[in-house]
Each structure stands twice: as C-alpha cells, then as structure tokens.
Image (cartoon, rainbow, N blue to C red; front, side, top):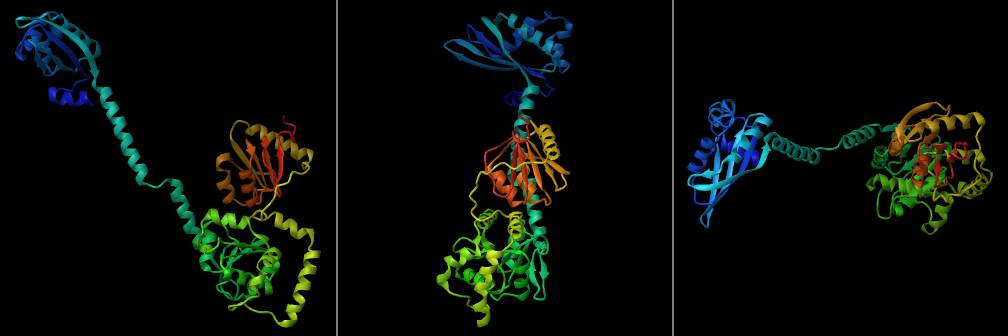
Length: 438
C-alpha cells in the first residue's frame, strides 16, 4: 500500500498510476531546478493534448513530488508523478521525461524505474484486510456443526420420559426394539440421551423397581454402572430379581454422567456377559446397601433356573442380540466363508456399486432394498448415528475397521464396497469380487 499512501501525499486527484523516475545529476541541483526542467524540456514535445502544464491544470496529472539527496558533489533522487490518464498516455508521458538531459547547470539522466498501478495496490490491500476480518470472524464464531450439535443435545435432553408406576427417568425409545440399557440415575439417563442412546432407563437409587425387573425379562439388557463398588452391588441386586444379559462399567473412579461420548461407546463395546462379571466380582458378596434381597427359597432355586435357561436359550435370542445397536463385548473378528446373495439382489448391488465408483459416496438402503439416501463416505458415521432403519450400506471405497464398528453400532446388516480390509462378526460384507464387478 506504499503507492496508495504516496498518492494521498502527492495530489488530491483520483490517480490510476504513479510514475517513479530516478534522477542522476553530475552536480548539485535543487527541487526548483528539477521542476523547471520537467516542464521546460517537455514543452511542445507531445502536443497540446499531453502538455504537462495543461494536464496538471485539468487534474489529469497530480502534484509532482521531488526527493533529492546530494553526496560528493552529485545529486540523485526520485521524481514521483501521479496520473489519472489511461495506460498508454501515462506510458508516453513517462517516457518523455527520459529525454531530459540537463537540470539547472548540470548534465543529468532521468530513467523511469516503475509505473505503479494504484488499483492493484488497492486490491492487494482489500484482499489482505478481508482475510484478517474473516479470520477474526472464524475465531470468534462457532461453526455451524457445533451449533447443530448443541441444539441436538438440548433436544435430546428434553426427550426424557417417565416409565412405569415409579415414574422412572427413561429415553423415548425404551419401548422400541429388543434391547435396553439400565443406568443408575436421572443424570446418567440425560448423559446417554445427549449422546444418541434412546433406549435407556434409570433406577433412581440402589433399590430395584419392579417395573425395571419386569422389563429386563422382556428385552436384552445391558446394565451400565459407575466404576466403583456401588456399581457392582447394583448389578448384583438387579440380577437377583431381573434378567441381565451384559454389564458395562464406567472407568474406575468415574461415574457414567461424567464420561464423554467416546468413553461411553468404548465402555459399551467392552461390556461382558453377566456370568463373567459375577465370576470376576464374586469376592464382593451379594447385594447390600439397600439392594433388595431374595427370599431364601428363591435364592436356592434361582441358580439352577438360570443355568437351565442359559443351556436352553434359543438361537433366536442370540440372533436378536446380533442386530442390536452396540457390537458384542470384545469381539475377535474371524474370517469365515463369504456369504452368498440371491442373483437378483447381487445384480442390484452390482449396479448401485457401479454408479458410485469415483463419487466417494454411499447409498443407504432399508430392509426392502429401497434407497433412503446418498451421503459422502466421510459423513457415513454421523449419518448412521442419527438415522434408523438402515439395513444395507453400499459405498465407494474400502471397508475398514472403523466402518465395520460404525455399521455394527448402527445395526447395519450388510456392507458392500469395492474392497474390504477388515472382518466383521455381525455384519455381512460383500466386495466387487463377490459381485463379479472385477
């Protein structure tokens, strides 16, 4: 912006260009000598239309600024002339000044060093300043994604409902699906709701409500408790009168309401069967601190009943578990024989996969093979977390461990992609090779 600043000092005219001319005189000269030479030696050279005096009177040429410096008996410096002429006229005026051979009593040489376009300098200033302003706006203002997440969390927190005669805090999806998550209190329910888990219910204390005990016998149940001794006792109390399938615990010393979304998902993925949990914590004894105890007769019969139930539990119950929102505890992926598809379904998958090649997109299909939508592969995780009813995902890309984890946590049954670099336990995987695409 040096040219813009100089322009303001030189002339009030609206200059387009600034001419910078270097002076080299053999002797000592002053500013009046230079100004006189500029006007005197160019007079009549370019005709009346480009006469410097007339151009200055009409405001086409601004005030001429002369900066001199004398050393060792010789004078050097710069002449700066603002111009509102067009490009060609400015160049002609500038070149005419190089014809000056004497300034005052001394021989001199003038050379045009630069014709500066003031508008370019202005544009550079505008762009630079705009970047600074935009950077400030970005630093101070939240991203739209952050605003949406904040709004979603607030809405989820408002979705809490009351369940049963005890009016227990629960998520709106407690009566939907085959699985539930049982937590200790209202704060835990709110935490899980904010993180997208709608099938959650709180005990509101250490005593086990009858409605929760009944609900656990109807659905696959995960007890999600704090990482302390009280959590262990609550699980044992719930198992005494209900039917708990799996147990998940918060990190040691933490409560469920304190942990982050990432920690919640990690804990639920690492859950273990009730029998394993009871074996690992048998040294803590039975339920206490207000947890209900069974009658002696029930206590004698219950272990045998549970043992018989576990031996005779139908495959159907395990299959229901395989379709639940969360993957099984500590899965060890195993590569099995590739599943097969009916020819008509395989052809349909092949056609959709061909359409996606090069798009980095993914089709989301329901159980009837209807396309629910198309999303970028990089947005697949957030989309599946907020969308229900997705049975199949067909994607342009590679099936990785992360993709498998997202699919299993969202109850997706089939993944179709060009290539697979991960195995899955509860999701069927089909690649371009399986479909005969390559």
